[in-house]
Image (cartoon, rainbow, N blue to C red; front, side, top):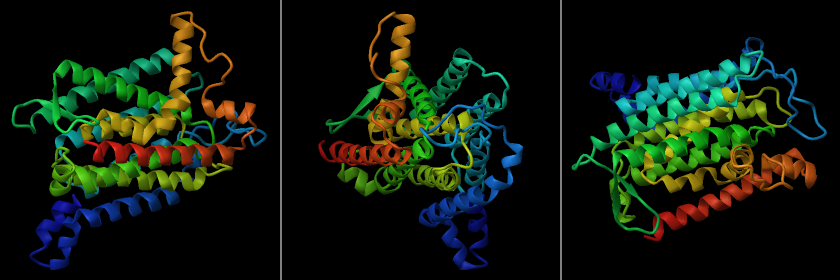
Length: 356
């Protein structure tokens, strides 16, 4: 809205052209989302459901009684700011609505007196992920000359055309895994939000400085993403909203994001990776999240459906193992996991963009 409004006002006051600069929009979106989240969250604590009692940290205050489900606040702020500031494409509009819908399903579970259960939530996640995968393929295929979606893969200088059925399967699996592993990582104050923040900043920078820049993309032998700057503004807007939440969630936390936040964040990160055209970038954004939560999901799946016992001596999510078996404090868990993710992110980006 602001982008188009500025275009109409430029003839009357030249400086309005600044609001059509994506650099300015990134700054506005990030700061607006941050301050709105910081200021509004405490005022809405009384309206949020309260945690039912899972302990989040060892030898620290239990989470019971803390307001939870605050993802409904900062995700809604993120969506509103995107609609206000950015000239959205049809795909981006759909993704924002699906992100909000993912938040809503998580929030309804947060406020429910009885948990919805694993299978019900998994089915809802699957529906959202399949819908997103279909929209992604349908829109992205319209932006190419041959009507096909092309992926650029590690260590290959060209691109690979992917048939619709395979793309939809890849996107669905990646989105579903991202939602659930991010949700599983939400167990230590500030851990999930900090790791996701690294992923958001990484993808925002890739969208704006690499994929969205025709000359740089050509130099690095990766496809140019025409809407890269738009995706960058959206991604930094969510980063700002998440920073505002983290301001109140830093140990010891005053509020929890609940499924409303973690599931929506996982979904959006997965979408960003698929939009980038390289599914393997998930390692740059979410390696520690996948190891921390994904191995636990794999363990449960193998035990429940295949009667196979693996990782029997390891507690999952992995942050629980480090706290209980290695006596890491919540701060140590956060900082060490963060350091590992930053190291992996830098290595993956260097390999994927230069070794081609």
